[in-house]
Image (cartoon, rainbow, N blue to C red):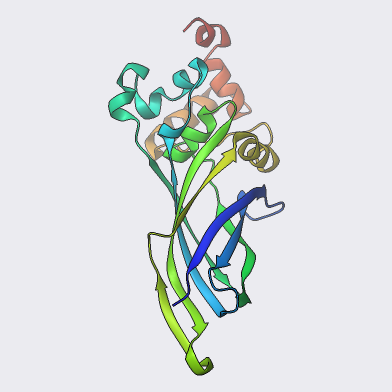
Length: 215
C-alpha cells in the first residue's frame, strides 16, 4: 500500500478566475520512490488554527464579532473550518507537485472572511487534512486501490498579504455585504425617497464619519 506524505510549498493568487481563488502548491511524496502511482483522488479539509498565532490590539478589536471580548478568548477561541477542496492527481513516481484550487468568498456572513479581514499582518495558521483514494501498481503490475487516511495532514502558514492581494485584485477598494431581504427593501426605500444616487452615499449619510470615529 502506498505511503504518501503531503506538504504545501506556497500559496499564490489565481488571476482572472471566475471568483477569488488561491492555488496551494502541494508536494506529494511516496515513501517508496520506485512505486508507480497511477492517480490520486484527493479530498482536503482546511481548518484555521486560530490559537496558533498572536493578535495585536487592533486585531482583537476587529475580532469581537467572532470571539467576543479578549478576556473571554480562553473559552471562545477555537479552530474554524474554512473550506473543502478536491484535486485529481495524475500518475507519478517518487514525488509530484499539484495545485489545490481553493475558491474564496468575500461574504462577511462567513466566519472565515471575518477572520481573514480582521487580521492586519503576519500569517494565517492553517491545518490541512487529507482523505481520498490512491490507484497504484501492485504485484505483477495489477491496478490496486487503497484509501488515504484522515491521519494524513500538514500545516501551512498563509501570509495575510496574499489574502489581501487576492481580494484587492478581485474587489479593488470594495467589500460585499449580504443583507436580509426586508432590510434591503427598507434601505432601498431610503435611497429612492431621498434621491440618493449611490449605495455608498446612502451609507455615508446614515453613518457620518465623525460618529464612527468617536465610537
